[in-house]
Length: 479
View 1 (cartoon, one colour):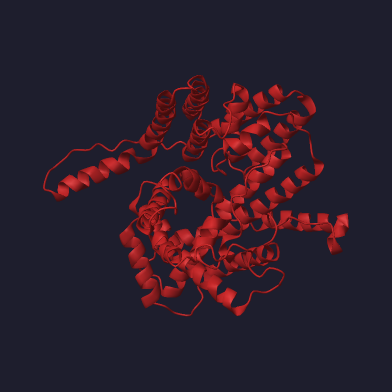
View 2 (tube, rainbow, N blue to C red):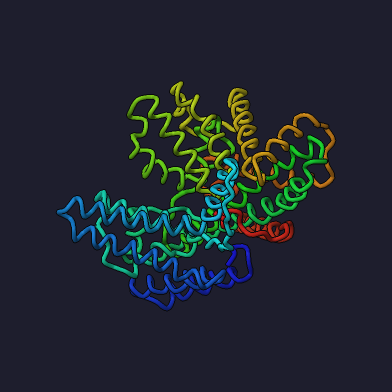
């Protein structure tokens, strides 16, 4: 079920009204959330419900066993390691089986040996990477004694399957989300209203910005070998905003939908294209995944509290894993390596924490230095997105070479509308860069009048549906 679909437009209010008006106890509400979430997930393919339920149940049992073996360090390690291996094996089979098989065959062909490999038609379950990582974080946190294992199986199933963030995040931690299902909830009008505003802004980013950019991106990348440099640059620019509007739009809708039920999800994007270097970009982009890798891989490897060489190794591993997490293709691995090469000089010079404050704080416009830093960082990120979008590393290289060697200054006819929508997005988010989302309106000044606020919401709502591009599935569903 897509967030930008009629089905979800009907599904969400029905679930919302039934949750608050009919159900009263915490147990019944949690049970209803589980049922609604499984309906939501089963809308794509009901067969994968059993896979998610199995992963959830195993992770729940791992917490119980870790509590039972509290006095035995060895048994606790076996339980934690067993659940990690089990979940990663499931993820690996569905996501990477063909990738490893095909590369295994290619390797032996280079050695002159013929190896037969039958490509399996394996359908990737939607959101498997997201709910698997969420389940793993619970087991690891219980093992580390950061959270007490829960005996409430319904609350645990609600934590893993909560439908707003089920298929594309944010990747929540048990320490943050699970306690919210273990205590009674009370309806908050202010929280619900802000949630609706965030949903509306997310729909604008997805339907107007991302979907309109997607059409141009598909045509340009399909014909990149004959296109001129300006067209190719626009293709890269449009994909840069397609993936941002698509994924951050999904996160906005997810966070806003959760707030309707009194649930707070972690922030996943913090206006990343206003970053002044690559390190700042990664603190602002896909925050839930970046912090997950930091806490569960980078720090256990030693983090930065070790020798420079080991710290560089740990950083490279994180970027490689991040790239490979996105998909079974060498383009994603290359994308991870590319960002590692951009990040490591900042790390070695001790400048990776230079920009931790907001850009142009207390000012309307950035300084010239800030503007140049943002422009350079944006260009570097844009080049990386070409590698991310291309089907092969060779295609990405050809695209970039042609973009710089066949450059013209003539604007293609199909590039004007997306540019306008991108400009609107940047304008609004720049003005709101110290807020949680683009439509977080405080009732002061002109907006202290309710009719003015409602007029703005109606304008955004009508504009979203009038200017919406052709409906496309969210990009991150494939990850």
